[in-house]
Amino acid sequence: MSDTGPVPAGAPNLALALLCLGLAVFAGCTAVGPQGDAPPNYYVGAHVVERPPADATVVPVSDDRIADVEPIQEAVEGAVTGNGSQVSVSKSEYDRVTDALGEAPLYENEGDRWVNSTGLYVRADGQVVRVMVYSQRPA
Image 1 (cartoon, rainbow, N blue to C red):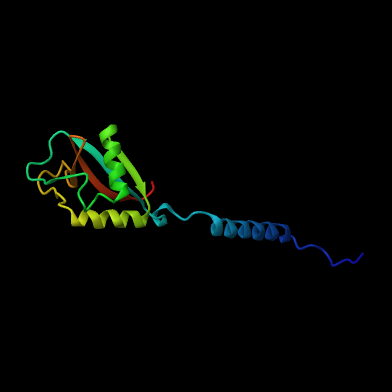
Image 2 (image 1 turned 30 degrees about the vertical axis):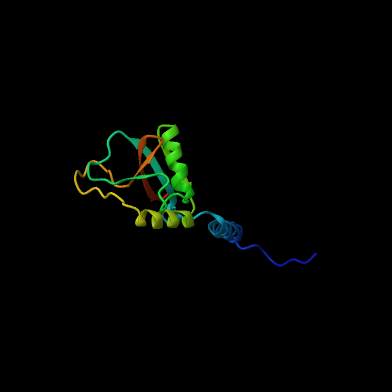
């Protein structure tokens, strides 16, 4: 057995500190970053409205600009059959929905700052539904 000499007084503490540092670095490499760095979640929302704004154009759910946009159709159907609907979509679906809404007669609220009525107004099953699209960062 070879003797390398006495162990310096701080060596066990140094080894423990290096181990902790290594674990912290490894954990930082595998952990999810701060929530501010997380990508947003994308949604299409819809709800039935009693009275659309007087100057809003209401299009049928079968309108060519939205008829084949599944997230819009799904949100409208959910709103008509329930109390409201929020459909989670991918970034590419979000882009497709915003493109479709850009082609349709989107109503933009310019009046009361306390009432957000911006959206596309759609008639489905005898009801008027407001459709909107939005993104939200995780809390």
